[in-house]
Length: 234
Image (cartoon, rainbow, N blue to C red; front, side, top):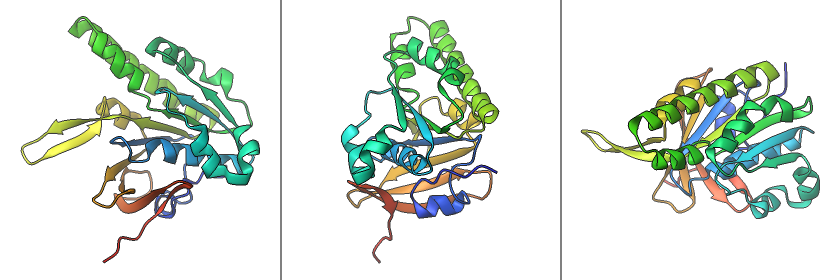
């Protein structure tokens, strides 16, 4: 059995029985500034400590070398060499990357991150001239998630997919859900939502979907050096 990739957050790793499982698709979604990209990068850092590479696909041009420097500290040079960064500039390029994942992932890769997976899709939908065009894009996004799920299982490598959110108004209160949530949640084995709290730099992490356990909730503190479990003061 392959070693799991820890997130670095004790409560999440405990619920996942050690971390991200090989062959799994792990969706992380939340509002801006809730630590989605930082958590994904932290997974890549933890992966590198096991001597394994990460393919990091940055779909929103938000990859931060400075953030990686603070995460890796004295290990920055060796860690940065273990991360293959790709930056598709539009939805067509994202499609190409997804369709050629097998070409980029060798036996020494332990993780794939697709950061803000629905950002370029969302921009393309905004340009769509008709409902038919929007439907075609939605179908393409679903196909890409299917390819990701198939590739994860075929290559036995965990994937982290982060997602933008949108507000949905219900009869009770506004809800925040991933863009194209039905597609993303359908294909994901694990779903983690990150929610802001009244405490600065503290978010609530909710493990909404998981192979092993029921819903789990805990609090995380976003620091310059990473994301860590946080105990709320009583």
